[in-house]
Length: 375
Image (cartoon, rainbow, N blue to C red):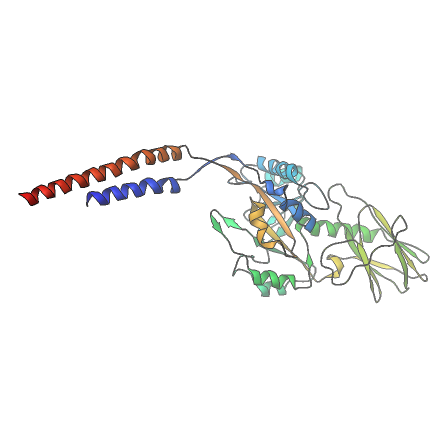
């Protein structure tokens, strides 16, 4: 191998090594997008912020990350427009041990997901059943065959190590055009509880019907009930006597209000309120809780797993109607490897030395050639 090639390879190595040398993982970093711009926008949009632990730490082995992740999210954002504390936690794998489940409950979590084969005690298990939003991974047939009053939970992860995953724009458009409820894990779960409580509270007094829903300790999510009666509705008011807004049958995002049916009405009532329905005459009333908001066929949420950078995870969905359950994972802090400055200094020193050596060597060879020609 010629001296020029040897020196060339040396210089190439000096330049490349600093670029490929791995950075060291330190303690823990913070995702300031949770509190700046993106986080508030997603919160107002109707998304939910849950937990997925700490990057690189297995939650079932290190239970301390459960409370730590909860506090990390609390320090940056409200969990939902309905409540401050995160109540959803992502656990990889299909099983969860009793001690981890107990720690989740003690830390205020109500929901766990999303590939568990059974629900732990005192926790609700959400199941991944809608495929993924990654390009080419969405199954529209599975979505269309979803049973009535079920929640379709779709997986999304924007990055795996340094690999950026592409979202499926056709799948997003397809879902947005479906007549389904766009929701989140926590909203779905608590809406069902509120609907049941509201249905059990219905009372009648002549031509008046009253529905009451008490405030809850954690999240105050509205509940939906269907009221069946024969009379005509004259007025629907809240505790202050103000008229309640009507909901269009095309509405796909949870909100308080009511809409008329041929045999009664659908009422979505906020916690901490009493709603009075005034009929034109006395009537028997039957009530039943509705699992889905606005009596839509089923619901859907996209679950952002291992969300270490909210901007990267959500940037492709700024204009989308979909609602996301973001499982926040505190990112590991990346520190500069101490070897990199050493390598850089070595490169700065070695490069001019190598160049001077090449020049001197070339001059020596040229002088030798000239002497050979003269002789």
